[in-house]
Image (cartoon, rainbow, N blue to C red; front, side, top):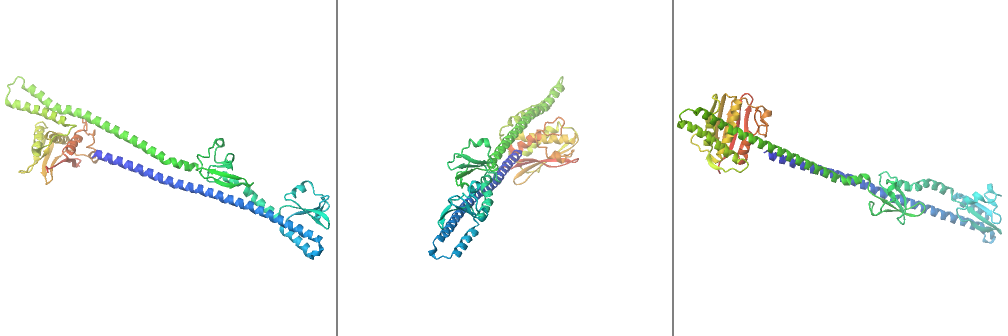
Length: 490
């Protein structure tokens, strides 16, 4: 029973360890999937932001072309003043020219081509276009034209609206790489040029390790392709977050801990079992000495008694009983550790033989009452040597419980399947805490006991005879009763 309980506990421990490992693995998978979703979302955001940056660059490119066409139209209208035969309304042409300039909010400067003296706008008229002012208005190629035979040159720069919009989007564009590398999800990022050999920026990676990075290992297989604000192509390589890398190893770590715990538990279990076996063998040796001591003491007494007296058959019979007792003890201990041979024997006779031997050697104030139903057969497969040991052990415990004065009752009964032997006394009884441990090896309440009598008796009944030995009841101050159950021959 105890071995089965240990096996159940070990099985439950392994089951709980596997359940905990599965739970940790499930949580780790959930967190890992969440982290991977964050990384994918971040990578998608990079792609969308790159598209936005590309769209912004395309917008300004188209805006530049649009301004160029407007300035081309502006100069064409001015040159049309040279041909009055076209029949155009001069006032309408001038109004349309001014509308083009005003609607686009494009700053322009018109100079004489010969000496670069400014004529338009009025506030700069008479000045010469040179230095920083020339540099400021040289963002776009100038237009040259003639009006009334005079060569003129038109300079212009970006529309005020476009300049303001560019300033707003400049911060967004210029922070593109910083936002990628210093991301909120702590993704290790490396941005390389189109040749994939030069690192342009990096984030969440040790700077000392950047020079030795291997893009083929430790990073995603498909980098994100982006267009830099200056139009260059670059590639964004990213890898798993530190948390995600840790979660990948967590199940293995917990599995290792579980293995270590199982190994330690097994070693502790084996050590405890070995220690228990050692206690059993040591106690068995003590029990052997104790069992041999009773007949040897009796024989020694007979020797002293017989000195100087004439021998009779009665003396020889008593000595013969002790010799048989020694032979019985030898047979009992020879059966320990091996499977005993069971023969069809009468349980009543084996019980009476054990009681008769003890009765002549027990205290005189201890009475034995043996009751078996008359006319009934109690024959069952039995090893009488070992069974008598069980009865003697229970009776000796009962004698100790009565403290040398009391009644020990042995009652036999049976039903269709089992034979029952109840051994009771009217001694001091046992407390509930003692009752729980009486069959544990090494547990005893006696001053000179070894705690092996009941465990060995239970082993003989339960394992060798496939029966049951258990405490039927025990009441402190009133007594105890043990029951032996044996299976009938089928």
